[in-house]
Image (cartoon, rainbow, N blue to C red):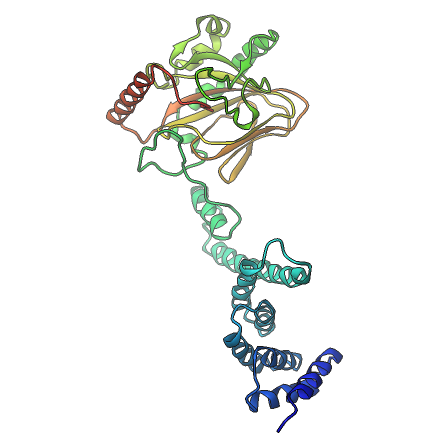
Length: 388
């Protein structure tokens, strides 16, 4: 008969002293005598790891996990032994299991364990990324301009970016590519619009002298619940000066901006009664933040032509954040979650307009337009609210 308690105490005391050579036979005797539970195999694994006998340590850890498969201490030791034996990928699998299973908030007693697991995951991710990028660099294609979409796919694969998809609030047209910012080459008329930037900017600077010209972009409808999403209702931090609004020309405003109206003649604006075109100068005051939101329908795209752009003004669409630059337009899908900031001490102004998605053919555009007119007719001409 062996003294189980005495052997277990002796083994643990030896581990605390750092004497793995003395600890190992204590736990081995307990296991051989049929007294091996999770704690015994865990102690044996510690001893074997201390002696750098990693195969034996892993075998003991597997036995411990047979008894307690969700024991975070055992999982952590297995991750560390795998890493020490050169299997960083296997170690990361166990480390991720710890991060997934650890209670939230993490108790003080587990914080060091969870931190070590996180470091292992990051180390493995860095090793994988380095290997992958080295191989791609050898192929010589990773820096090609045509590889932009592939580079984004790598960011998603490596966990550097989150996947964002279209989430229109009113109507989803299937089969359209999930694109955040579009390639400007798909919109040949953009070059002429950008070339008109000086003339358009001169006009909006004149309009800015009239402090009453810009009105809050989000104006609540008294016939609807006042949800005031994101604090934007009647908020002059985000204001608009419309040239076209909901398919109607604002003749007075348009008369103040003849060069802008002339530049718009080259733009293929949608024509939907009560809806489109919508063209406006969008103003964002210092310190303002437009909260994350999505547009109502994915058959249109939004165009920004930056006109007055102080530093630290940005737009995030999905997982990509860009900084506005004067005269450099972009086109994006507003049904993908987006938000904007003006972190400067000056006002930012852009020309904002909507265009059809280029993938829609003429028949589809006519059908979508007819559908929207029918929807508005059923609602008595009222549009979906919070149309950012």
